[in-house]
Length: 294
Image 1 (cartoon, rainbow, N blue to C red):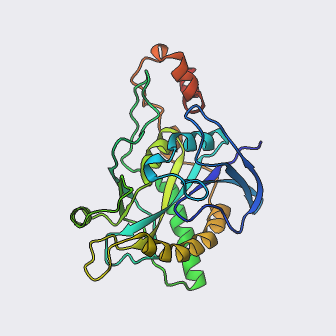
Image 2: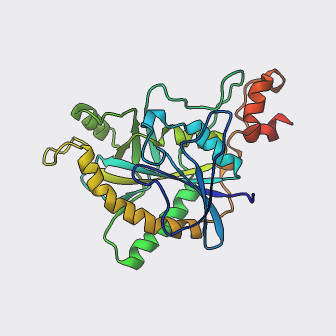
């Protein structure tokens, strides 16, 4: 199979790609178990892309249950170098309205006990995560979305300098938590950008989240506290927007990479490579074989 450079991981409500020519669906077993679902291979303007529903079709996985290590591994095995993660979120700021668009620039990790790294089992490594989203890719997508909104005369606003706080879930926040995150200056709150962003960086894949607000969490006194009914109401409009946007982004997003993501693990290893267990090396050959051979 030809290498596929760009993939989309769909979030809540985004279980398939519209306006894309579907070629096939494939199952990819990995050393870390099975991915969330079959991976759909599609075509946009003569460019092959991959799509994976994060929660599985029919929404079967809790945020804490998403097999993110298997998902990232499977996409990497296809040759993917850029991932767009779509995520439903709550807004923590008055100006960020439900159905607006957010390209977060930072993350605060408030998850508990999720598998956050491919390192371990005899190999110690630390990657830089100061800028958790690929800035090169984020800036490019920012321009594509801005041009789209302007051309279409759409009143939705795009926010690009916000912090995404990722909570464990599956419960929504308490008011105290929601107001705490607001005091930190966070813009949106969700449950799925972690560990995806961390694992993608370790796998040397560029990663960006397109966050789609569906509610004001529970901090806003004039609004009802978030519930599933409210989320589903705005999710329909968000899904219409993202299904119009994604084919345009997938067509226009450059394949070339001039960012540091592509060599993120080059200087990550602290373990003497000769001491790494053979089984661990085998599992991570896809990511780090080029470094193991040196």
